[in-house]
Length: 56
Ligand SMILES: [Zn+2]
Image (cartoon, rainbow, N blue to C red; front, side, top):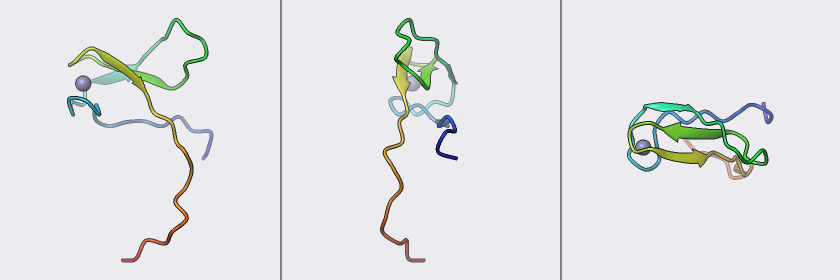
């Protein structure tokens, strides 16, 4: 699971869902996406799991 690519469902900048995988010229950039509505490219990086319990 931790190796899965994170898939954003909406652009964090304009909230549109017109997202596509982004091919960066920089090979160190992984998991990049581009929003074709606002023409931004960005990455999604998971920092880790939350340790606190979520109370229903
Ligand atoms: Zn956008």
